[in-house]
Structure formats: C-alpha cells, structure tokens
Length: 281
Ligand code: PXL
Image (cartoon, rainbow, N blue to C red; front, side):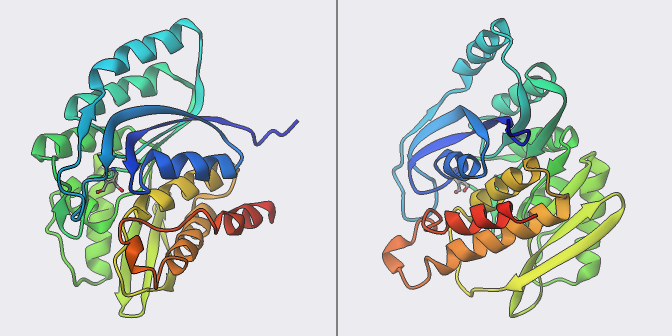
C-alpha cells in the first residue's frame, strides 16, 4: 500500500486546445501519483489569450450544484481541493461551499487565482470576479498568485520594476486577506533570474532560477499543478515550490526554439524530470 496515494479534486476549465488548466493539471497530477478527479468550470475551444480570438465558451456553473450533490449522496470526499481558472463569479462562491462539504477533515485547499498576467486581467474577468477571488483566497491554505494577480488581490499598483520592499508589501497584503501560506511566482530581482518567493509562518524564502527571455502561456498552470503534486507527496512548501519551478523551467526549455508552439509549453516529454525528482527523498 502506498500511503502517498491521495484523491484530489481539481476545479478548472477545459480549454480543448491550448495546454492549460485541466489538460495540464490532469497529466501532471497523475504523473505525481495522485488519483485526480475533475470538475470542469467551463468548456472552451481554446484558451482566451491573444492568437485564439473567436474561442467558444460554455459556462458550466449551473451544473456544479447537482454534481456536488451527487458526490455528497455517495459520500465522496477528497484529500485536497485545487482550483484554477473558474468560469464565473458565482462559481467562485460555489467553490467556497465545496471547501466545507467535499473535503476530508484537514483536507488541503490550494487556490491558484488564475485571472491575470502582465498587468492585465484575462479577457472576461472584472472587478466582481477579483472580489470573489479575494474571498476564496482568504479560505485557502496555500495560494499561488503571480505578481499581477497579487496586485489585483491586494489593490496595490502593478509594477514591472520593483525591489524587495514591493514584494514584501504584496506578501503582507495577501496575508491580510487571510491566506495561510503564499507562493508568489515570477519574482525577479535581476535581469537574468526569475524565481518564486515562498511565505510561510512569517518567514520568506526565495528560489531563483535562470530566466528565459520569452513569454509562454500556461506556465502558471504547469507550475501550480507540479507544486500541488509535490506538496501532496509530502514535500515541504518550499521544496514543492522549488520542484515545481525546476520542472516548469524544463518544460519551457523544451519549448524554446519551436515558434509554432506559441500557445503553451511542451511539458509532456519532460514529465520524467518531475517523476524522477519526486522519487528522490
Ligand atoms: O492558463 C490560464 C488560463 C486558463 N484557462 C483559460 C485561459 C487561461 C489564460 O489565458 O484563457 C481559459
């Protein structure tokens, strides 16, 4: 018997093409050895980023209460809940209910407030969604915002250039929201490095790595999924943040030089990097 075997519920959209959200979370969490249940928040033909204009979008908010009620009638519970891109503001409130009804006692609540990047909200999101996401983050054990999302959540200005004092302000603002632990992604203090800042029990720790000077879609989802897999395998918060950063970098390195692959990262061929890393103590 493998005691690491956990059942996790992932709530995110299905972007049929585009290597983000559930098409990323499911394979990565499976590779990490988790039983992975899904609750699709919406079905889109592609993700919503520039280049995929005209995408279809079916909001599944109205299906969610019946799905959850069925699970409850069968006493189905989960060791962890991991949420990403959600389909509507109403749905964010439904996820709050799931935290109360579908988790085992002590179940882990991981929220990636996937809603913005590069200083802007993704197409389709507004201030109401941000306000709902603030409430969800308040209930989470761990949140994984990027700097843009942290700025929206805290109400602080988004800055492209900053120092450690700005990062501290973001972390303090996020702590005031109520989230227990914070993994802030995309933090850079020098032109050649990028990294993650991990805040736990009043302490912060930084993991820098090489910066590849190109922007890739879906890396937040690759990162949050690998982080969640490592964390549920029993790694510490900081170690999980490092494992996920190194795996995401490997996926990016595997995509550089493939301009036809502009919409996502080729994370699948490097899954063995993650699997091997998790085998090591
Ligand atoms: O990777 C985040 C994400 C998830 N889902 C959809 C998106 C995006 C980012 O643009 O559009 C539908």
